[in-house]
Image (tube, helix red, strand yellow):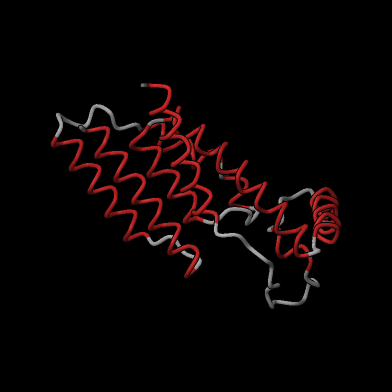
Length: 181
């Protein structure tokens, strides 16, 4: 029963995060706090907090430190991974992150090809790596293409990543259920 309720909360949490990320381009801290409280309530209701994972909470922050500094992943997505990891453990969150990035990569590739931006994006990526090498620092990705004295932000096509996280969580829960029974 605890697994069913926990999975339901997890699916609901990631679905709501995906919807707000799609609509507002944000994963709200208030939502994440609400989900933490809901999961803590379930843990306490079913015998304690032995199954909470500090490693699952810290691992996403460590893994995403450099991509976050490069502005390749948002703070909301990192916090969403951390909340998921806290309740499901480091093994689940590692697989979830891999699935999320695989799904996100496929979606990004399709979007770039369909929009006709694939070659220009690859040139920008090459320029980015070249500039990082020259400066010997990790530059924020979007700032790499601005003139040094220009402060205006560039309008990049972005994909709401919380939706990829939601799909990865759904897929992983389905695979877990399928292999269990």
